[in-house]
Length: 124
Image (cartoon, rainbow, N blue to C red):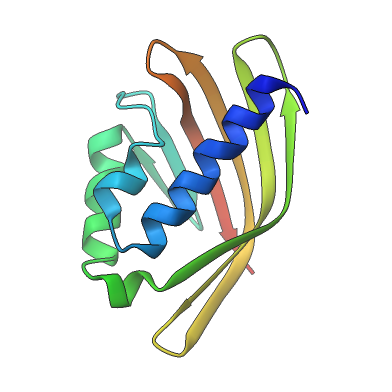
């Protein structure tokens, strides 16, 4: 796999690890700290890093509420020298309940490395 795609995969793996450690702030370092960052889930759209972080903090206030995250079927596709599309499946098990679904992420390479600028997550 190309070095940039490996680096993008490492960003996702770090996010998974941070999530499973119950650390929302560390998880969010995988996102671009920009007003342009967007998160789409269900009928809601969060615009801006601060809004996305706030939503995560509200919904996942503890490690127990975050549970255990896993990814599968992750595919990475280079769209340009600075843009990668990641798609896959996620599963979260927390307090005996589980959520599964699909995600598509747009990662952009900037001064801070590869960061997610758009996240569309759909629970199934």
